[in-house]
Length: 310
Image (cartoon, rainbow, N blue to C red; front, side, top):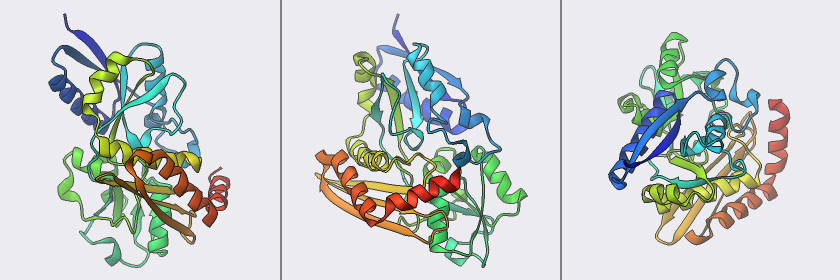
């Protein structure tokens, strides 16, 4: 019998789409193995009536999967890279970063109006402090409303709660077949995405060479290096997914360009910087860019954000 590899996933529609995509590709690349998915709810899936920033746990969408992996109940876990904390539990590691799709944020508006053309005081739904801070920097008049739940729930709230628009990650919208609802793909000059946004990551146990070799066939080198640089920046700034930090790496040939942003919650202070260097120095570039942002005042802004989020 073929050796079975058990894959862990959150049970949301998007997470299951991503995990099934991983499984189907692993099957094609590894015909000598069989694969099975085990799904579970994470803390972030269960708590839907509280803003993510108020919950405060960096492993909101990963912890239960990681515990199952440490217990030997699953062999690997599939995550959205933007949900994966920069410091992983002891004994676990990122084994693969899949090819990134469009990392940008998108606007889905009720009346098909772009963000720049929305009326004064337009009501915008988003669950992300990062998006809120950058949107307020761009348009301080916007009224930002908390938005939790799966994609279907968020779409329903757009209509039911009479919002003018909601802001989501392009990747999730496209993966679930809602691309025709996208009104606008936001320029990264307006909204720099979350670290890792648009890519699927596979977490495994350290030292599991068999599973590592199986999943490495799905690794995408340019996406891996870009996201390693972004994660190094985030780790240096000690920011979880609910801190207003955005970053985007781009690899062209042997060069990697990394952009980063840190903003106050009200958008009145926004620091941006970028750095370019060798693709082989991804982590170092991330740390250097974080250092540049700190010199510009990022630590002061982030400390203020942490106090306001308590």
